[in-house]
Amino acid sequence: MATKQNKLFLHIGTRKTGTSLIQSFCQLNQAKLLEYDFFYPDNDKFDERKSKSAGHWNLYRVFEGRDKHYSLGDYLPASCPANNIILSNEALTSEHCDILNIAAKAKEVLHKEFFTKVIIYLRRQDLYMNSLYNEGIISGNRKATWLFDEFLSGGHIPELEYYAVLKSWARAFGKRNIIVRPFETKQFYDGDLIKDFLCCLGLVWREDFVLPGKESINPSPDYVLVEIVRHLNRIPLQKRPMYKLFLERVFDELVYDRRYTRKTGQSHTSPAERVKVLDRYRQSNAK
Image 1 (cartoon, one colour):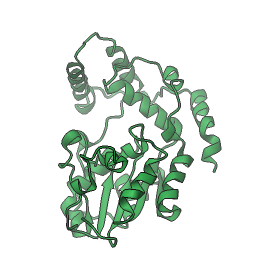
Image 2 (cartoon, helix red, strand yellow):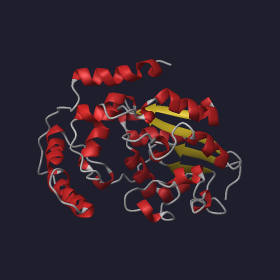
Image 3 (cartoon, helix red, strand yellow):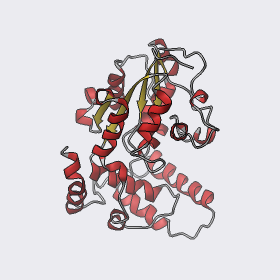
């Protein structure tokens, strides 16, 4: 597979921080990254989400070790073609796994083979919550119709306890091996997320890199569009695939084809609600 001399850059999200864009960029530029001694494995081995993600979605299952069907060898060849490896999976900081214990499990799998650097992007919690709410409405998975205040009171989201999450990864891999970046355009290197991620790898932007198309960027619908879909979710279509196809067509028409150009700038979160969210995490954020 690989030897201890290999450096592994493990990108763990979090969600709502441009992970799809970063993964698509790495996938599109596999050959070019290899020229610079960086190997980004394909997602073909695990085809469960191949059409949905250019990331390594089942990596969290590899680390959990509960299902022997998944192994790190499915991603990495017996002889690694580069000294540096990039793996990316935002599920490592989501409800898909035991967030505060997955780092220790990842170490068990990786520490004998790799020198590991962990890259994590953090978004201000109130903005994260607003984006997560939008996704819950527009995805069609649950046909959600709740209002934002109902969503906000729905329970604790462990991944937003940033200090606890970072502490668990620092405990596993060492504080100096955790690269923490704010998901804020003004703080990105050169104001660009891709350039910022490359900087984390020790690379610089080159003109021969290829940028992903718009299909790799998750839409950011405004308040009105989210409200439209929230009401559409009340339509009694029983078959989920049929409804999701319907929503996809709505977005193709309104968002991707730019037939809906109005941007209200309005947020589902009022100033008081934003303060409420930030207050919930103020103490841990200060650590």
